[in-house]
Structures are given as structure tokens and as C-alpha cells.
Image 1 (cartoon, helix red, strand yellow):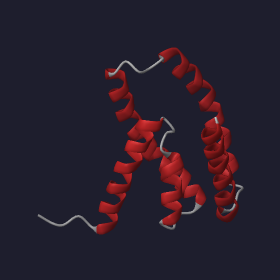
Image 2 (tube, rainbow, N blue to C red; image 1 turned 45 degrees about the vertical axis):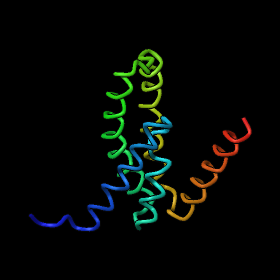
Image 3 (cartoon, rainbow, N blue to C red; image 1 turned 90 degrees about the vertical axis):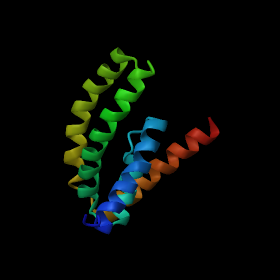
Length: 121
């Protein structure tokens, strides 16, 4: 049996930690996945797009687990998702016009703001 190439193993291990973080916090995993992909050398646009594919897979798994625990408000989730469909289309087009360097700064500010809010709330 052939050994798994290191980059594939790294991606699987990172995905494991993101899956735990996303399912535990409900933040979708992008707050972890995007910085990891940026660290691995991906552009901001490729990091965001790749993150969404991974989050789709992770979210389906987390949805199944939370459904078994009866931790879902389907009405609220669907309504948020409807708004999110439009927002996702707008955001995907906006990120195309932001350099990776500026994206990192914006993303860092969002994370710091979120952390401050959660810390002081």
C-alpha cells in the first residue's frame, strides 16, 4: 500500500481540526480554513473558494450530527440561507477586486472585531 503524500495528509489533518472547530462553534470553518490556506500559499480568491467547497462537505456532516441531537431551527436556518444565497453571490464578486495583501488585513480586522465582541460580551 502506497504512503499518502504529505500535502494530502496535511490537508486531511487541517480539515479534521476545521471540522471540529466549525461543528463546535457554528462559524462555518472559514475563519480557520481561509487563514490556513493563505499560510499554505493560496491567493485570497483561491483560499475563499476552496474554503467554501470544504465547508460544504463539513457543513453537511455537522448538519447530520446536529440533527440527531435536535439542535436545529429549520425555519431560521432556511431564512438565513435565502439571504445568504444573494450575499454569497455579491461577496464572491467583491473578493475578485481585493488584493491578497488587502484581503489579509480586512480578514484580520474582522477576526479581531469578532474576538473583541465575544470577549467583552
